[in-house]
Structures are given as C-alpha cells and as structure tokens.
Image (cartoon, rainbow, N blue to C red; front, side, top):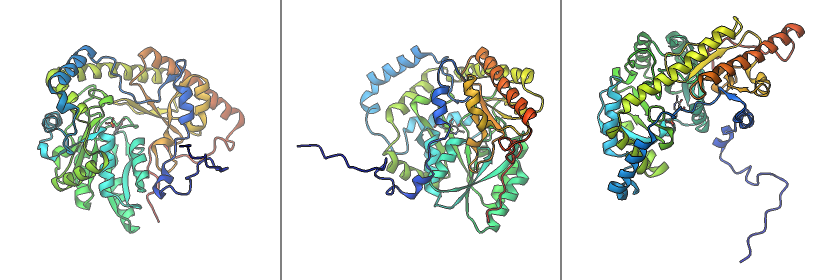
Length: 438
Ligand SMILES: Cc1ncc(COP(=O)(O)O)c(C=O)c1O
C-alpha cells in the first residue's frame, strides 16, 4: 500500500484552527530558545531548578532496585491501584508526620510528581474563567496548569515573611465584588519557588483563618519543606486545618525527580474525585516508580541523605548570598532563603531582566526573568537565581558575570538617560498586581 500523499498547504500547522480553545494559552516560553544556548558548558546557569542529586548513593539505590525486580518484579511491572500503592501511602503519612501532619493513608493519592497533583486538583475544581489566587510571583509550572485549564490567576502580594494577609483579604474582596468565583488559593509556604521566602508561623495561622472565614480552599504545595538549613521544619498548614487544605508533597527534592512520585493529601470527598481524575489521566501512577521509592524509604537512611542535601544546598546558598553582597550594586535587593533552591533578586530601578537576558547569556551567565513567574506580565525588574546545581565556585563566577552585565546596563542608562528601552512602568519586587478584575 502506498503511504498517503503529504497534504499540500502553505500553512505550517495544518491543524491550527482545530485545536481546543484551552490550547491557546499553551505557548512555549519566549526564553526557551535562549536556554538551549544557556545549557552550553561555558555558560554558568543560575536558571534551572534541577535538584543536585550527585550525592545519592547510587550503589545502594541500584541494589534496592535489583532486589525489587528479583523479588517483586511481577507486581512492580504490573498495573496498580489508581490511588497509589498502599504501602507507599503509609510511608507518605510517616514523611508528613515530620511536618506535624496526622493523616490516614486512605486520604492520600499518589501522583506523577506533585506537578500532576496540581493538574488533577485544577481539573477537579476549575471551570474556564474561575479565579485561582496565587502569590506574586508564583511557581511557573503551576501557572502553566492554571492557564491550560483557562483559569484567571489573581496574584497576591508577598514580602519577606511570605504572603501578606491584608493583601489576601483585599484580593478575596475585590474578586468577589467583581462577581467572580475563587476556586482556591495556591500557596508555597516553605522556601518559595521563585521568591525564596517562607510564610511565618503567625501568618500561617492568619492566612488559614482568612481562608476559613471566606470559605476559600487552600492548595498547599510543599516540595521543599524538609530542605531547611537552620531550623526544624515548620508545621505544615495542613497540620492545623484538615478540611480546608489540600496538601501536595513530592519525592523529587528529597530523593530524585526521575521517579516522578508525588502526592496529594485531601479531604475525603475530594480524594475520591482525585482518584477518578487520576484513573482517567493515567489509569494508575507507575507501580515501578512507587515501589522503588517505597523500597528506598524502607531500606536507606533517607533522612540522613536529606540532611546531606541540605548541607550541599546551604554551602551553595552561602556562596550566592556572599557574592551578591560583595558585588551587586547597593540599589539591588534580594531575598535570603532559609532553605530550598532560589534567591529572588530585584534589580536597580529602571533595569529590565527580560531585556537584559540575551546580553547576560552573551556574557555566559543565565537566570530566569521575573516575568516568567507572573500570569500578567509583571516582574520585569526581577529575576530568579538558582543555587542548587552549580558548584560554589561556579556560582561565584556566575554572579561576577551577572554583576558585570548589570553594571553595563546601569552605565548605559546613566549615559543615555531613561529612554524607551528602560522606561517601562515597573512595580517593585513582588507587589501584587491590581486585583480589580472589572
Ligand atoms: C513549587 C513546586 N511545585 C511543584 C513542583 C513539581 O515537582 P515534581 O512534579 O517534580 O514533584 C516544583 C518543581 O520544581 C516546584 O518547585
């Protein structure tokens, strides 16, 4: 049989007018092309948020996986439960206990990374046009999900202590005054991606109280909670409030992202909906990955491994903060993370991190411009720097190169004054955009 003749069309994509409306928001990031250059070895990338798993004992993990295949291969390579492996769900409850959560394995749904948990929760709750409240800035992967389900994101201001309660109150009132429905507040209380800050204990209580009073569900996304440098993990928001919070966790940062194992802990009725959504999305989360993670938790000293990760990240954070303090112009500001992977830098007034990125990549350093973390185009004066992956020496070199670029930009600005290139209206650091939706 002859293959069908190719369709002749001058259009690059024959199907362009057949895609569902929800795909219109699914656009490749404008900075993706630059990142293929940024991944060259001569470029110091302070952009990516890849966990640094070089310290994992691969021989121990390899031996455990060997035993798993030998002893339980027929189960590990078979379909499994849509809700996830019961033994792993019990172990997940043990992990969550470290953050003060008392939960039953029946209320846990295993997901393909916590990214899929964000997707399933949004799928279950959101119709097009529904409002999701998010911190300003917020995790780019969650913003992508909210866009794909055609939600309207309303950002809420943060400061060094995390989400600002008064701004949350105002945002809820403004959205409701505009006759819109809020489906949930998406929040990252620990070592925020990208802002690097954590929600203070006092504010956790206040935010929960506001959401309880206003009947707003909280989606607590907590992949970094155990990666603190200086103190014991803070109790999760879910530890104080079971009915009004869906909690998301992940083994991507405490073990390895390649297994793609995360979870959602949800009030019972919601959990049932999530399992149905999981079954229609994947039938079941991968049995093999779940059993590999479960075996690792049972046989390795995983908590000690997390401590070693924390030491590795602390050393890198210190290198980054020290270099910023030593080299950055005094008019720049940055957050001081107590854990996690990220520092949020606000550039001197008038500089635009997105416009500057090609020049930075030419100078062999990369970062993510702040605009990637807003649903509404704000954040141009800011950037996210990640310290998780490069060595401390590379981080110092990266910051040195970055400061060189910033100084050149300031020099240009000084020489040519505030021309069109620099004069965009900028909001400081992480103020909220206008919450007036009318
Ligand atoms: C805040 C936040 N949530 C969710 C995820 C997704 O993680 P995973 O799907 O690997 O569990 C990430 C990954 O970087 C993240 O930073």
